[in-house]
Each structure stands twice: as structure tokens, then as C-alpha cells.
Length: 505
View 1 (cartoon, rainbow, N blue to C red):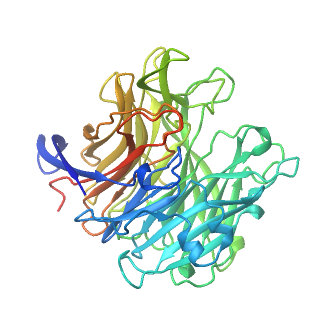
View 2: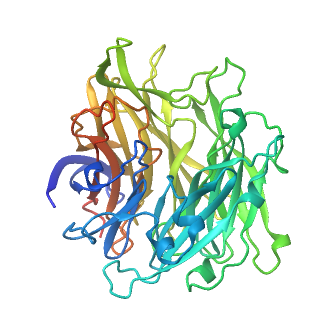
View 3: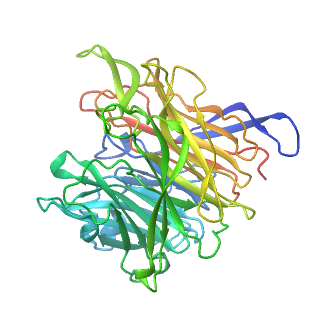
């Protein structure tokens, strides 16, 4: 695989010294899955992945591939069909219906791979599908997948016409006492309007051994789920996902965060809170399980691309290409109406830290320019905002679709897409020291040389993860275009990058 080396100076605070020090940070990137490798590529590809002990594994809709983390050589000759684990296990409710929103995770506490996604079998018939590997080595001759299909209909409710709500945008987190997943509930009979959320705990202990899993424990908000729902403004919950191999303290609850969109009055554009959800699961006595909501005050923000009278429309990021029919720049979706995965959790021993990010407006006046807002939460009990900031190093470019993580020293990195009317959508990352509270400095990963002209979709999420072996090396995946995509063509590319701070041992 062809790799590319990129170097620049990143400045961050050395805790043992009183001044800023320059550090050479070298990033390496290589091609991930490209549309040309797939028989039936989709427009909306949701590129995400994770770094494990031996490989990096990537998902695009609806295929996966893995790469040796030292040589970048692909594990399989071609990307694998995303439904393969369930097909091999003869679970038709999964292999006939997974169409998107797929996820690849690495359970660092158990050294296992996870592939998951929602499945749409027939109108109103939904499943969530999970496959857990029996090894951390995807090249092993003994590799097998423990597969599960969880029916969702009993948890997602129905509207006044009896139509089940659509369980959209599932997000997944690994925690010692369970695998946690969230869904947005959307009304198919009302233009798929958001009406609520569902969060579920899955039986991780049995799933790791391939045993029959206990019944999922699920909660909704609102509760009960209404048959006629108003626009829900706290959607798209992100569960905490353990980074590193130091587990949370025994009995530690799982937490989710979500956006609090501005009041839907056609005028208000700002919000001053995000939402925190405390999920306590009791597998012995399920009646003792709880799901509790609270609000966290944050610096005022306007969600990326937010339009007061069209809060669900977050398409505003311009590309250089001009639409001849309108005379305006082609634009893509910032997905700015939600917090983005992952919520990375790390136990430092002396304190616990959660980090997460979202796209917000940073432009003044009529400018819709977007940047990356990030948050660090700390606390041994209910976590609270410890610090936050915004990545927006210029007044021209839009930054969107972020994903954030931190290494064992508290160095943070956020990856994202960047574009403008003069810049083809490209891939960048920014890094800084959380303990040192330094200013993020940006690194270009991959310059795009084409635009997406036939769709406003720019995936729905990306992912930043940290090597569980060295606890230092960040790995990030995102999409770009080498040439304009127009008409009926689909020709996107993905790029996988990794780097580490030189001081991280």
C-alpha cells in the first residue's frame, strides 16, 4: 500500500517545563476502502473503524476490510460483504437487511472485534445485529464470529397509525458490564421527524463467549414513547466507549451524551446545554436498572449549518464546484444537529476523563462557517464539564464530521473533514494537550481534488481511536474525492491515518 508521510510542528505544553516546546509530529496515511473496490457502492458511506492489537479494521456501507497496522497490507484480497458473519451463521434477519449505519469497534478490555448495524427486513420489522470475534487476530485460521440478532420492535414504539418508528443512527459503546447502543426514533409517516430515543444495554459477558444473550435492557425518552410525537431536540445519544486497557472502577455506570438543539420556535439559534444520560444496568434484577437524564451547562453554541425554520436541514458546507442549474456552490451535509462519536473514556487512575466533539457555527453575521467544538468531562461520580474549546484556525474553511480521542498522557486529537468554496473536501486533524490546556494545532492528512456533486451526503460519522497496545498512536479514517463525483457515478475514496505525540512513551 502506498503511504504518505506528513510532518509539521505541533506545540503543546510540557508539564514539567514552564514554556511551550516545539515537537515534530509525523503522520502516516494510506488508502482505505475505495468505491472502485465494491460491486455496489453507496453514496452515504459512514466511514468508521478501530485500531486493535494487530490490525486496523474499517467499515463503509456495506463492507469491511482490515489492514496490518505495521505494513498496511489488507487482510482480505477484497473488502468483505458486511453481512458475511450473519450469513455464515444463517441469521437471515441480519444478512438480508443490513443497509447502512454499520459500526466497527474494538473491545479493548477483552481484545475482541465487534461489527454491528441495524437491519431492515420488511416495513416495520427491525433488528440490531452484532458480531463479536473470538480472537483479536483477524488473520487467524481460527477466526470466528459470535453472531446475534436482537429484535427492536418491542422497544421502538409505534405512531398513531400503528407504524413502528424507524430506529436510526445506532451508536455503540463498550463498557465492563455491557455493550451499550442508542437509536434515534423517527416517524416514517411524518417525513422521518425525530420523536425520541432508545438506549439499550446488551449482555456483553455472554456475547464474549458465544453464549445465548440475556434480553436487552432498554429505556426510552420520552417514556412512554408517544404515538404522536413533537420534534425531539435531544436526539443522537453517544455512549461512552473505553479507551485503553485500564477499566472503569468497579460498578461505574455507563454514560451517554447528546446535543440539546435550540428551541424550535423559528427564531432561536443558540443552545447553552448538552445532555448527559446515566445508565445503570442490573442483570440480576432488571427492575433495578435505571436511565437518568441531566443537563450540562456549556458555552453557548449554534449547531453547524443550523437554520431556525429548518432544524433538520444541516446542509451548508460549500465545495468549489458550481451547480450550473443554480449558479451556487455544491454543498454537503455537516450533520451539525448532533454530538458525534466517539465519547472516548479513559481512566487515568487519579481521575476519569470523557472527551467528545460536535460541529458548531463559528462564522459571524450571515456566515455559516463551521468549526469543531470539543468537551472534556471529568468526575468520579456524575461527570461534569471540566473544559471545552473550539477548533477553527481560520475564517475561510468549514470543519465538520469530527471524532475525538485522547492518549495515555491526556494528549487529545480530533479528526474531521474540511472544505470551502475554494477547498475541495479534505481530511485534517488537530492535536493538543488536555492537562496543559494548550491551543489545538492543525495537521493536513489528505487534500481532496474533487467534489461530491450528485449527493449532499458526506457520510454520517467518522472515528478516531487509540492503539490499545502502546496507548499512544492515534488512528483516524475519513473520506475524500480524487475526482468530481457527478451524474450516477460513485467514486469516493477513504484514507486511514495514524500518528503519535513524540513524548508519549
